[in-house]
Figure 1 (cartoon, helix red, strand yellow):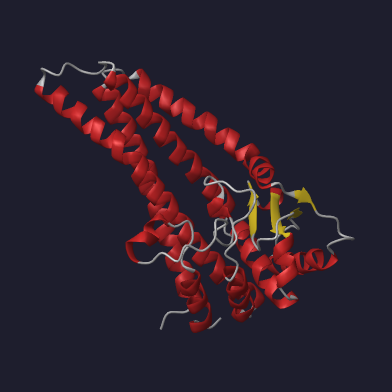
Figure 2: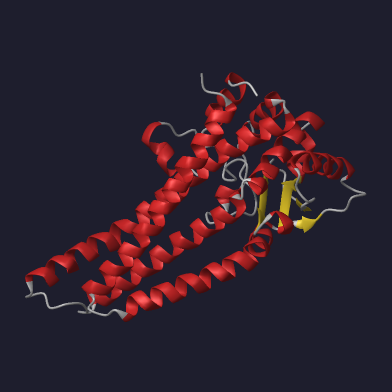
Length: 297
């Protein structure tokens, strides 16, 4: 019988397989583009650019996300319950106390960001604090601390950067090809590689985004699992997710680039099922609640 422990192990293994495959695919994509355009410099530039963007993302991603979300530092005096809940759970999880931010927004939501557990931040909306009781708040904070402990915050940043890099590389290839760049079309192999390059340039950004969304959904399931193990009370998070999902109003400040970081879709629950779930940043809330309530800790 599957338990929260077995789900956690399975999700970690599958996620890292996805990331590894993603990185291999990017290297292959860069080689195809450089070969098709008959310019090895493209591959070298791609490698350098990816390193630079990863460095920038590593050091400044949290500040960028907090700025986009309109988050402000929370004072201990004004948000005492939030501070004590976070402190207690951080001690239980063996994590340093993260910085705590408040987002002035009536839509209930929360997210964690930062490059590692020593430089992590948890942000919650004022709307979340208004509708949750202490037990439910513990479930949400435990979920966010699990993202920190599982190193999801860094993983998600790296994946976002890689997705953006694929889009830029694909756009560059299409522009150069459109203006007549590339190998001699009369050469059979060169012509085939150009066609392959064009197909990959069109499809690769879509595939990259789907991989990003798949990883995001898996990390949410894993954080739910880890959060329930941390509090030893899955019902707290399950009840919180019910209240959060009951809100259909989107957040005032949000972005497609950061939507996957939140505990729930900041654009509101779409309710998509079937194949439509491939394009969601989060797994359906009813599936998350079901998993929490059906599996013991």
